[in-house]
Image (cartoon, rainbow, N blue to C red; front, side, top):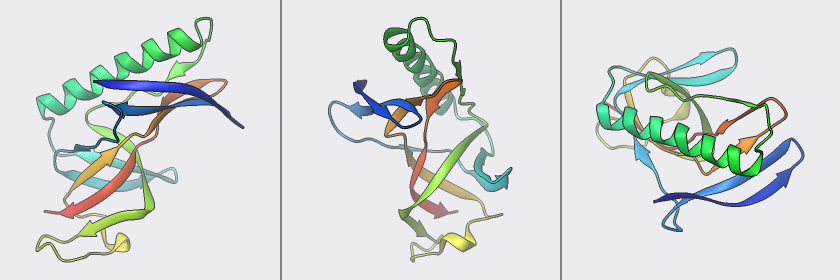
Length: 142
């Protein structure tokens, strides 16, 4: 079961790590495309898989429960995750593979049909909002 751990103070607010049975976890997205909108990387799916939608909706519920427990009087608004698109972060550890399973390059991921392996290692809260940070573990051209 997904569970948030202890609250950690940060310069911008607070956060809690998110683990699955005390381990790191990930999810594979349906096929889609990455684009840059207002300097943010947005992953947009081609079509909506029911299990993917159910997962994101459940995570939204878990996030609200976390906020209500730790900040019961908080007026922060959730940065809601929608199955059609989520904001993602590419890290130095993100791996890229082309459709033949050869190593690919980050610079080539735009305007290509992709599937992502993503994780959200924690939930964060600031003065006005709360939500998840999505990190891309792997990119696979399809």
